[in-house]
Image 1 (cartoon, rainbow, N blue to C red):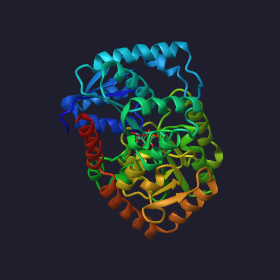
Image 2 (spheres, helix red, strand yellow):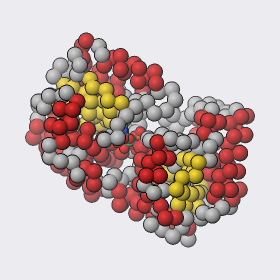
Image 3 (cartoon, rainbow, N blue to C red):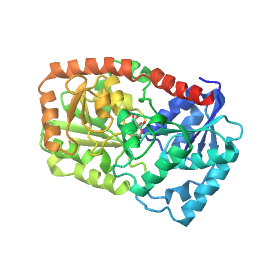
Length: 386
Ligand code: UDP
Ligand code: GLC
């Protein structure tokens, strides 16, 4: 992809959207890159399966103690961060640049970059300053970016704007939207919808609304259940697992709600799955219900590629991906009534569903291809390396 050799860095080895995206970027660079990880897990396995070298650095458990909401990190995590930065700086010696895929890994990479005298790129995939991080954490990471990053790659305009609003230097930022490989969607056999429904025990004539996100209050699955509770004929397919610490109680709450007699078995909770394209094909529409601003939302593009219209919440990067009335339907975040009305309107209008699906599929292919994303990252790497 480029002649520069790159050491990508991520703090987690769980498969969130950021890791799915880096998987494609690292694979495209695999002849001259490695991915340094602070823990072992499915991401390490997935990288290995795609022929990408993984450098397991350890240190993840100490970093986990740096809570997103904390004001000061505490002495142990601080010492651990410095130690990890030294380890990463040593690992970075043979590479031309460091490329961090998360705020935590960027902090370590920024310090390592100083020690090893390597340029550091930060791929920013979070909307800073909206509740996931304390103000002190945001100030610290933005100051580090202004001081140490040669480039900040933002996954949407909304993410870029939030970085600048938090004090980040606008001249550092390049927007590169996520892109998704269309091949698994092109490979879906015509009978997939019926076959998957048979596996799941969901009749063909049921209106099925899919929700594909890890289980976290931020992702708004409860809002979808509130909406579905009021629509007796509608079933919900809830796909995704509790990926990170602290998410388990939310999963338990959702699972017990799904069992309530009012739903009469209409909520199907599948947990985390690795066959998202065929599960999307089983749905009639897809709901993306984030109650906080979603930085990008890969699932939106995946739904469009599967020719399933999305009803999504109108915040963050979502309106950059989905145009209301054109390629999907946008509703206010956290509003179960509006969500329910949008679902119901689509249920009653198959011609509109088909039109949105067609335009969405064309739009996803034209604007959010994996190749376009890789070219955007490539340009940044070339500029930085030269
Ligand atoms: N995903 C998956 N299995 C699941 C649920 C989600 O593989 O059970 C994938 C999904 O297809 C998407 C990614 O996880 O590619 C989630 O990315 P997104 O940007 O939508 O959200 P994030 O979790 O990163 O905030
Ligand atoms: C993060 C964001 C998500 C985005 C993904 C890939 O996980 O939460 O919105 O799609 O990164 O950039």
